[in-house]
Length: 99
Image (cartoon, rainbow, N blue to C red; front, side):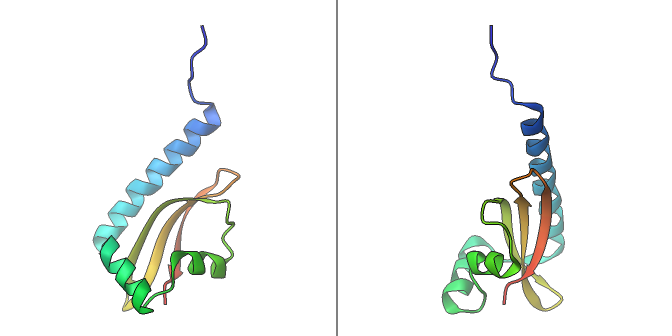
């Protein structure tokens, strides 16, 4: 009887994604971060760049999976804090200038 258990590499990727999400949550609480509505308003008003524009400017591979996104005040400037899982399974947190 076959089971649909995830492959080991999928399990590792999922564990990394969860670890990044938890790590991001902890760091977000230490910083003043915008909620989703505030992020949308900031993009619409031109206060910050769109996520797509920031990722393109940073050269992030478009096939990467975005795990989480926050916009936070870091020493008086707004930054995107982004959890990314690349196509090769590498997970990382990126902090990119939002302005």
